[in-house]
Image (tube, rainbow, N blue to C red; front, side, top):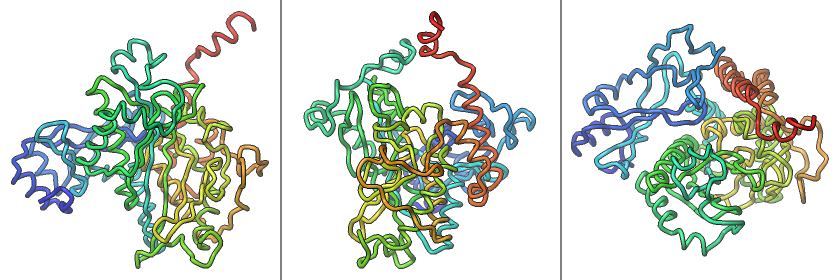
Length: 455
């Protein structure tokens, strides 16, 4: 039996027993998209296949630095941080080639905290889309920085002046990807062995800047692959005394790092919802409605694609990231890029998410807006031609400019509440407001240089 053939707990139990695995590594995604997990003995894991296992609910009650949120309702000191159930996902099993005789299996929160679980949020949006007759497909691509020094070295420098793998701007360089072919091919081999196939991998513009495109699949599988890729690409790099960063904007001198998502829909006959042979650019009316919904509601859910203070450093004019919810035909200066193609390739590219976004939430935000657009038959504005950064747009098409503003729009979004539930909206907004409040405690180098003497 191959891991691709495993669909049920019974299948996974048989595979583990026949191949004599003594431990299994399990992981769950927290609200920031960070993989949290542990080793489990074979006996404990097998006994948990049907009923799940308990995991401290602090995983959904703390930030990316393990600091407890001060006002979360679903979990916190006031509830004692009890265990919450985690459901094991047998079909997510992957071999972990960087560890001998080891499997990696994902889980998702169930029970009392399922309402604030990021993976469950996407699953619920997809289920509502399914009720409308749609199956969503997605392909996620990531731009990231590779540092040619160890984690310890960068930490000693307090993350200042990292040494990139390469110098200057050299996008799509064949020289660089050949010189560093061991790193490129080693990472691609890892992806292949872990069943998260890669469609393309190339040098981006900027020192140490790389971009990888994961192969399109059903949306939930694609989000799983993205979460696992972000985690184990970092592991792969650190084991080679290198370091990968998915920070949205690590330097003011270079473009930010995107986490773009390609999206398409199919009907029950596995035919493209977005393709119409007889329409301009082969764009169906449903595709236009999807774009209209995404364009209309994107400001309300921006914080699901731009989840950190740093996310908004990337969203500036002229740096390959959108500042409004405009769309265009094969136009990379806007948030929603419609890509005409064949029945197989007709799609949109959602260009708002940064590489720092939780893939489940970024994808969920795009889909719920698009589904709402189809449901309400929302017509989009005229497509932008030329430079979207120079186009004057209506106020309601401008994206929020800070995490605090984005969190406020999300907290008050009826759309988000209808699709994600009030518990999720409250919890996620609280976590983003916490992030902003934590930042406001600090004095930056920029402020010291600007104000210390002259003000």
